[in-house]
Each structure stands twice: as C-alpha cells, then as structure tokens.
Length: 622
Image: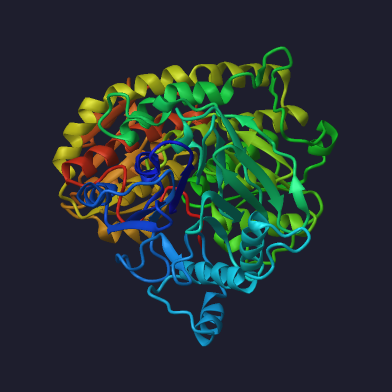
C-alpha cells in the first residue's frame, strides 16, 4: 500500500518521480503527489485519482528542480482528498515529507504540536511527522557551529528526534527548503530501497522504479536512516550510528515491469506461470537423492527431522496456498500442520511446543500482519522461516531462514503466478520433509518426475483461454458465484472465488463440495453459477454426486475437468478442460482457468483489472 519515490541529481526530478509513481501504481492508491525544490522553495502538485490526473496537473503548471519526492496514497487517516494527498509540509514550509505506514500515537502528538502553535491542514497522521521534524530544526537553530554539529548533523538529528517519538510503522522521505542538495529517508516496518547512480541517487518503496536507472541498490533495514545527496550516500542506525553499506545488484530489468505486449499485468503474469513454476524448481530438485534441496533454511537436516508440528501463516491468497501446503505436508511427510490467518495468529496466544516450526507465507515479504505474527512467534523462541518472492524484504530479514519463490515481479494486484509458485515450493517442502522421514527413494523419484511435468501442464492449461472468455461472456452479469472442490481442490475453490471478488466485484464463495448441502445449497438457483473443480481423483465420484444435486435445482454448472473426461459434459453446462495431473499437484494446474475466468469476467464488466478498487498489492498497514 502506498508508494514512495525520490530523486537527487542533475536531471529534472519530476520526470523520474512521475515514471516511478506509475511503476508503483500496482501497490494501490487513491491520490498522488510530488514536490520538487527550486529557487529555495517547495513546489508541490497533488491530485486525487490516478497518476494521469497528477501528470495533467503538472503539464498545466510545470515545476522545476533537481531534487524531489513523490507519493501514491492509499487512504488510512482521512478520506481521499487533495488536502490529504502527500507530500505534506512541516512547520511554515521548512520541509516536505512523504510517508508509508500508520502512526498509532499521532493524535497525542498532534495535540501537543497544536498546543505549541503548529497548524494542521490535513486529517493525516503524516503531517504530524513533518511538524515534528520542523520542531526539531527550530530547537537546534543555535546548535550549528558547536563541536560535532554541522548543517547535515542538524537535519539528521531533527529527523532522528522525530522518529524516536513515533509509535507504529513508517517509511519516510524528507526534503528541505533550505537544503536543496539533501534528502533523508528512514524506515521501520515499511520498506525503502536506495538506488545508487552515477552522480545521482534514488529512493523508492521497492526496486521496480529503479530498474533501468541503476543496477546497484541498498535495502534499508528497520531503524535505519539514509542521508542521500547526488554524490553521497550514508546509512545510520537510529541508535547505533553509522552502518556499513550493503550494496546489492538490482537484478530486475526495466522490461520486467513492462506489459510486453499484454493488455494487462494480470494476463501477462497468468501466462508467465509455466516459467515461474519452472524457476521455483530450478536447482532445487536433487534427483540423485530423490529429494528437494533448499539453501536458505538455515537449519540442519537433524534439526528439521526433529520438527513435530508446522504452522503455516499468511493472508489472502497466501493463506490459500498454505492450505494446499497443509494437505501436501501432512500426506507426504506425516507432520501435523496448522494453517493460521496471520491477522489472528499475531493476537492469539496458542499453546505451541518447542518442536514447532512457523512458516510465514507472503508474496511481497512486507505483509504487516504476517510480519507481526512471525515476529511474535520469534519472540517466543520458535524457529521461523519465510516463503516469499521479494529479496531482502522485511519478512525475509526477520525470519531465521526461508525460501524465495523466484517468480519475478508480480505487478497485478490479484496474485496469480506467486500463488502457483508458492504451491510449487510447498510441494517441494513436502517432498523434502517426507524424504527426511519415511518416504521411500522410489516415491521420491516419482514425486520429482511429476514436478518436472508441471510447467508443461500449466502451459497446456493456458490453451483454454479462448473458451474461458466465451464462458465469461455467458455469466458476466451474474451477481453470485459458488466455487466448489474437494481435498486438494478445496483451496483452489477458495482461491478462484477470491480472484472473482477481487477484480470483478461479484460476490463469490468457495466451499468444500460436500459442505454445499449443509447450507450453501440454499443459494442455488437459475441465476447462480456453480464452478466445480473436478479433475480425476479420489473424490471424483463424490463431486459428481454434488453436481447432480445442483443440477436437480436448475443451477448453472461450470466444470473444470480433465481433457479426456467424457462423463462431465452430460451434466455441466460448460466444461473447461485441463490436462490430467497427479491429484496432489492439481491446485497448480486447476487454478489457471479460474484465474482466466476472473480476468475475462472483470474485463467484460469494464473493471480495472490491474488496479481494483479499494485494494493494494502489498498490505503494509493493519
């Protein structure tokens, strides 16, 4: 949620800021703004709505300057208005600040600042930060010239003093009216990345705006401040002083965040799944020993063999992949698994013994609830691992170890390739834990052979696209959908329903197919389509009986079924075919037509597929 960009160097700042904000649109926002410095003055442009409106505002009222910061806001405190859009000014215009996160004690701080004469012009918590920094600058006006106090130190201490008073999460970038060469950034719980250029430097919420501008980046850690000039970068810990710069290569290319000829990022990412699944497995299949291998778990095989229980925690789509993981690990490794909503786990106090391993699952690595849950488990002495897609993300840094998905940037708000990659990695973890315990060499070999066929099966599943669009046209005006599956395809039903809700705004619910007659069957009528996920497997006949029950009540039936299944056509109104796949890997294949169905329904309804209302890609606030 929300996005930050910043630039200092020889070029016009506004060009990079607008381009960077466009690359951050996927994060979710309802207003945007930028500020640049020129002739010792702050030049601010803000607009409610999309970046295009901000660009039009700048076209009609151009601004100059070689340093600036920009922001896309997802409303938390105060509605989406121009007054609440970032950047916000501190004091009487001494500085401008942009902020991601939530300041929990802002009301108390605001009341104290008002009592000291500061005037607030917005309903945001962010404006409090600006006034706190301005207050620090005013208190230190006479300090310059004292031993160890220069202009840079004064501004750094003003920011440090402000963030020391904050309770909550923040990623901030600040520019100063009287220091047109200086930008300061700081973070706690909200990601920031510094890009190191040649005679210019950048700041952003994630690496995507930096691709094509630099190939060297520094991920800020919690409690760190970055002091950024065109030819200088230093990083300080809030309490411990200067830290060593951990400069890393930026692996993403500029075209990794471009549409590459597709109409939408979601469609592009659906079609990237054969490659993303292949990348998730690359280098991790140990055929010689009939197992999987992971380099970042940071636990010995002996420690992992001693695991007596696993907790998988996540939110949204990641919670659905965790359910797939529960089925896989329990079947193949015989380890008890619990799946927890991270938003609930962080506030619960469940009894967890010392043999429990906690996995946090998240695409972005920044999901606030998952991060908090993992930190709480770690505080209590439990071993924590992360399964995420973004290198050096907050959760990747907080966990004791983990596994990267290697799915590449996922821009579409509705997760697609990250979900199938998560399921693929969880399958390999089931193989790994299974081989540590009782799984035979031959069973491990068979598992690996099945995994190696997955990219081809996903590729084959994509061939249903044209037919799915025809089905979508038939049902696009429905107001309710039911998604039904059993065993491994129950989480798929949940995920399919979520995708439809997210981007088409149609009410949809996922259920185990057998649970339909315990309540949801009351919803069945001629206008309510039921989507059955019914590839061949142990529950095939049972799901066929459930289809008969819906058919008897004249409910329209859409079936996701195997290519060579002749029976289903006699019952279903529409059949979408997928290749036959071993039951335990079916979620990775059967979800593909459901992703396409949600995409085409949303498109036909005129919805903004990549930027659905009220949603953000990375939920970094509670």
